[in-house]
Image 1: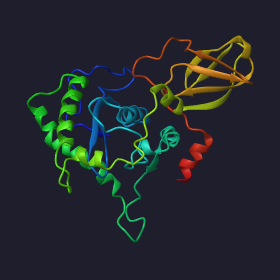
Image 2: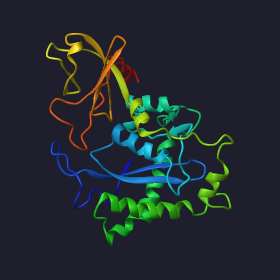
Image 3: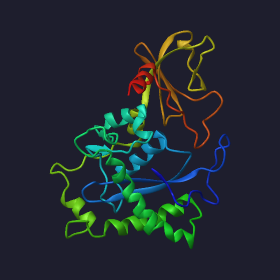
Image 4: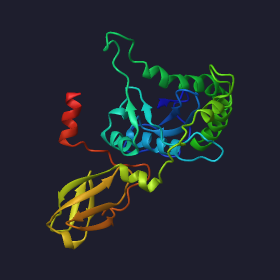
Length: 279
């Protein structure tokens, strides 16, 4: 993720009333290391977080009409940003079988040059900003959808351009070096959401209510006063409850549905906090 040189839209489609100012127009990118084929999108966000990164990665790995650049990779190289440190991001990548590679600190090896990952990640951003976003001085996009339409046309032209070493285009290099067994197809969005869920033990109150991440739910009276296993995820607005062999739900928040563009923040467990401290 990298902030666009445009920074913000004049009329953003949504604004979080609990935060100061308008959301930033962020440029998301994933690039194949060999061919240079890229998939990029714009999104309005309030900083780099795992929720926005996972939504973008799902769209990047899902099948796209007219664009063969899709599928689940074997490994993903990130820079040293906060997304790679997120526990829920790591758990989703493990469920997909993706090996997350983060750059080593500069000079930490002593035998070779380190911290090369950030340069690889930033290079496609500079290409788009210097060759495409300079046109925004003449005509700025009015919305996030319009900016993505312009960017999609540019990326299609970019992928059809010459490869940096081979005598063919970038997209031809991608198609010519696919694995013999084919690519791993991306799962459905519903299945992807289950990877971002985690179990947690909670005691249901005698009023059949419990609070998860600041949101209050009212569950069935059959588990009132009991210790249950609660399942909730980063992309879920409903809650599931397990008690013994029975599973109940989904249950909606008592105060109504969660507003649009508002999501729960992943709360780290004691083990995750200790692991981050040791790291």
